[in-house]
Image 1 (tube, rainbow, N blue to C red):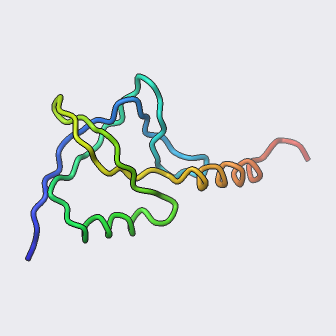
Image 2 (cartoon, rainbow, N blue to C red):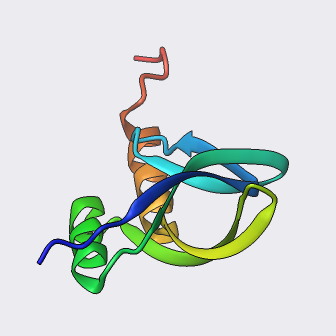
Length: 101
């Protein structure tokens, strides 16, 4: 049986959509910023498992309050794991050319 879910416009206050130094998309907390995205309603556990698999081990699903048409709702949002961002930042800094020989 196919389930039905809806995708709605939503906003995450005080967060910014950005990329890690390795180019992976993520969200970071930033006061006054708004990250816009989609809120999926009616997802089942099997859908969430597939999303977790899609994002892979570098991401974690966090429960964060989002805003939809002025109404606040709790939602799962995939963000880059802190230890992944730190490791990749260090790795990227080693690979960036410094201009020195």
